[in-house]
Length: 299
Image (cartoon, rainbow, N blue to C red; front, side, top):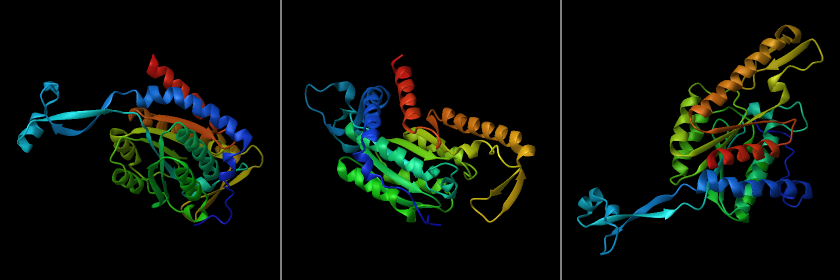
């Protein structure tokens, strides 16, 4: 279902002094760690050309030469540009809030500011927004057009709400991207369809992968006040009245186990996972993550 009122006005953040200051720090952090993590990985295959005298014979591809019936060598080019694709969950579970911002609003602002920082470093940004289907997408691109396209897609209330089908967005990613890319998957990871772990593995085998888990404080713990708490299925009509005192510890223990499991899925796929909360600063956890990753790569 579409959101009746969506508080997202992203373009003014381009000139907001407070936001710009944080974004500059983020851009500087990326400038250092980005190279170590993603750009400093040597050469990538660019194609074949006919062998000429003086070429390095070790670069001859004998299989391709046999098929072409002429001697061909492999050419490589330095990997300089990072293609980043933001994959954002806009399903019903992302519309919950006990704070000033819904999870979806918080995630949209986070993605927008991270995208601007990435574009400032000369890299490309694209997006795939999904619920039960992919509701908006764009190939990675550079320049002002990329950021305005992203802002418009994130600000459109018709894109928000509905079910959650992770399989469909993964299928779209495989069609969209033929080149090397970094996938930044942003979701609360609540209500994921069975077998979603396999799709994480599928993405990580082809692309670099970072997950950003966006949670509301009440996704992690019951409120302190009151004795009963009404829970509603975000994908159905079922409601249950829960005794807070009886289920508080059980619920919070289950959440910790679930979040540890999700982190384990990303670890097994050799992808990173950043955990953020709508009640906290959105930039700091991202900064800390890239600083840690940069130190690991350099050590």
